[in-house]
Length: 155
Image (spheres, rainbow, N blue to C red):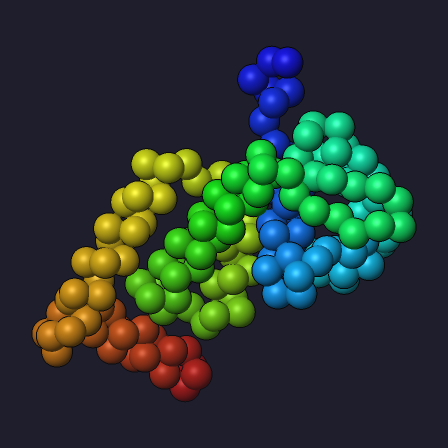
């Protein structure tokens, strides 16, 4: 299998992450729950699960619970961690609302690599340290955002 063939696509990553979250929250993943989580039809989920099973990432049989294999769990944990890092950065540093940050994190988690993610983590930590003081740049950024939003609302 070539490097391109072994790479998990963004859509497949979304399925792995959805299964991971469902297992954590509900103790099990069902096709209908995966479909609801990703806003897709159950037949679409079944096709994706067959593909993931062929790659050794999930345990799947029609009409039964779906589970991650150890390799699938590693991939899902990585995607979930990336999602969390990006979402926190978008909320804590760029000051986006949680829902907006989460939606953007879903798209960004597939394209940012480890060096970029490490820098986001460091910048978020730095911003957190700066926030503790009233004169920190993150506080000034908050004031700047409020002023811009007020100006936009007034105009």
